[in-house]
Length: 136
Image (tube, rainbow, N blue to C red):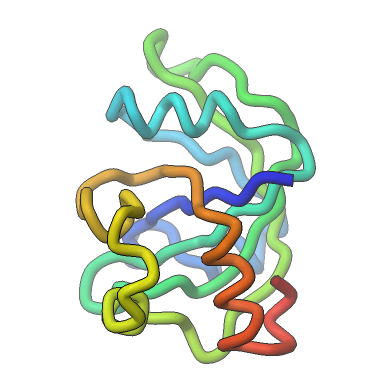
């Protein structure tokens, strides 16, 4: 299983929305590097959901529910179906991630505007230790 991270503006679509709906089509990814991550996702992979803006934190986990497919709204894009898995309480803030100095080469830290990316398996292990019971 591979881990990914997908960013969302909580005012546009939040973890609470995904939790309520149970499933969603993750779309709107435009950056070529982020699209490669979307297209690489496989059924059963896990995705950290990250709130941008003032929240700036990993807030929950979703599971990839299907294979990537072309975006019907954008011929150059791709979409993926995600299912809600759980919340991470309390959220793991970007400040905590940076302060750990363990992930300085990860795109989340290096490329702040990248919306979707693979997450290091070491990050999943770190979150599991940091937030036991989070479902990681």
